[in-house]
Image (cartoon, rainbow, N blue to C red; front, side, top):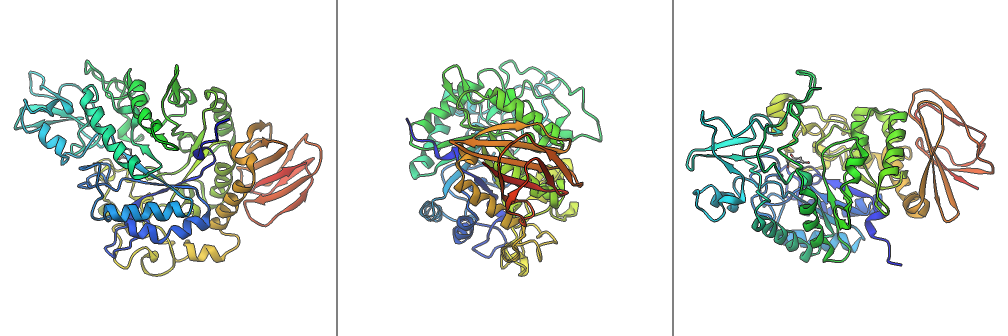
Amino acid sequence: MATREWWRSAVVYQIYPRSWMDGSGDGIGDLPGITSKLDYLQWLGIDAIWLSPIFPSPMKDFGYDVSDYVDIHPIFGTLADFDALLIAAHARGIKVLLDLVPNHTSDQHAWFKESRASRDNPKRDWYIWRDAKPDGSPPNNWAAYFGGSAWTWDETTQQYYMHNFLAEQPDLNYRNPEVLQAMLNEVRFWLDRGVDGFRVDVIDRMLKDDEFRDNPMNPNFQEGVDNPMFSQMRIYSENRPGIHGLIAEFRKVFDSYANRVMIGEIGYSVDPTLIAGFYVENDQHLIHLPFNFALILLPWNAKAIRDFIARYESVLPPNAQPNYVMGNHDMPRIASRLGAEQARVAAMMMLTLRGTPFIYYGEELGMENGDLTPEQYQDPQGINMGVSRDYERTPFQWSAEANAGFSSAVPWLPTAPNYPTVNVENEKRDPYSMLNLYRALLIERRMLPALTEGSLTLIDSPADTLVYRRDHDGQALLIALNFSRQPVTIPLTISGAGEVLINTQLDKTGAIDLSALQLRANEGMMIKLG
Ligand code: NOJ
């Protein structure tokens, strides 16, 4: 039997490089900074890091506007710094994943500069150019995610180009096979260099409608309530038929190397069938781990989450590896959304469900949203749409020293006000801290194959609680989570002895009465059965 792929048992830790550790003293995090702190990650017990983009970029969207796919932005360091990071991470058993942004480039990328130079440039068709309507208006109604039309007029060549995000992020034209080959070569550059895989940005959005039809407006959209980003249903400007075949071409490149993983950012959805559809089509392999954002989108409600897990588990194709994401660089901090106590319940859930968990940097400390005034916004989504992602991008909180120990200079975004208490140094010393909870859960994952390889069975339980079993080769675990701020008793029909391995308050271990399991307010428990 083939050996089990590493990413099936792994826990991935997302680093937003600008904000994690500044080695150069300019107030912006960098690669030498990351390398200098790998011992922390090894101590914590994660298996892989995913770095948000580190490539040359004008930083209009903080690196998600790449102007050269095969180099490092000087702010972050050099290729030599990257190689040093890769070697140092691998020496500690930590895999390194990069962020690929194939849907669009920066407008400063050499490809786009050529494309916009003239209508007969050989790279003209590498991007999406269309004539204006007779009245001069854009070719259709497509809206950009970051505000305004998805079309920008080019004076020189008298045509519009298309962009799903900022005007400085023109979308590539994957209906031209040269574009695909060019992008796959950029992927090979990094896979040859030894990276263990990629998280692929908006992977489902690479193909647009071949007839450029108008998008319908979203009938459920509430002006002034919903994020203006969702006023339109983007059924024609992204995710068109043929996208699976295109993704399969990327996957083939990953499969031509040993032990690499492809993670795909697909549209935020609570529809498990949609997520499940991105693993495989007929016999064609697509994405190893299509992101599941349901835990971000669903209300923090035990029943809603239970129902989702049941449906997700039931629609996944054979051998498909589930995954769970609760936080990232685009979404508010978990502790701000759920409160500090329930964030601990969420941590236990994320690290004990069946699937590959993704931890966004700082969640292991219980970091909260930063405190920013609109004048301090740097994120274009915040500046244009009022929904700033800067709150979840504030500097990592290493210590109570100046600038949270992140940098000797004033950081590019202000440190969150709670850094004097919520920081690595403090939490390492506090046996009951969030950091020690994460670490203890990560140690359990390494010791208990039931957590990484076991089956998952949901068990009926009272309202506001979520209970499930993980079973592997005679090893049986019960996880019971109390989503409420009230104590609860869970009647169980499990016979035999139970032993608490860990609870979210980190104050209980040992034998327990299983017939009427008592959980305190906001308590989660992992119990060894038999
Ligand atoms: C999704 C990324 O996560 C987000 O940060 C970025 O702004 C857009 N894609 C555009 O690349």
